[in-house]
Image (cartoon, rainbow, N blue to C red; front, side, top):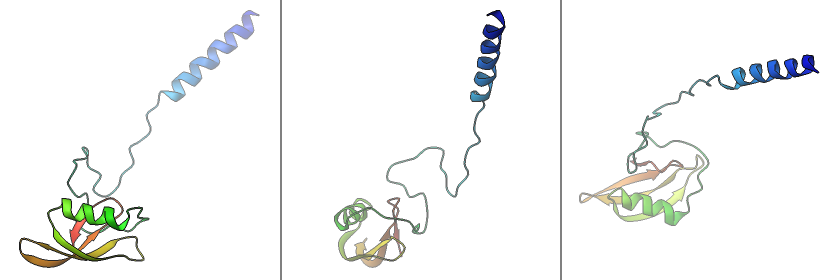
Length: 104
């Protein structure tokens, strides 16, 4: 009985020590320490599966200060692309799956 109790305690100590080890942080491009709303984490559109609807993509572009958003279409890389106006100038604009809004 004492022997099995001793084995159980030793097993628990090993399991506790193994689970207490920290996993290394995953590196990635533009992995900001603090995620600030309203800021891009990339200066170019990031390819990826995009779940935004056309209306949501338009709203993201408008939240970034653009007006007159037209011709929105999702490309083969999952990036919404269209035309918009900002500061009186018409420009091409894009929204990626992360919500980054960039002039083309």
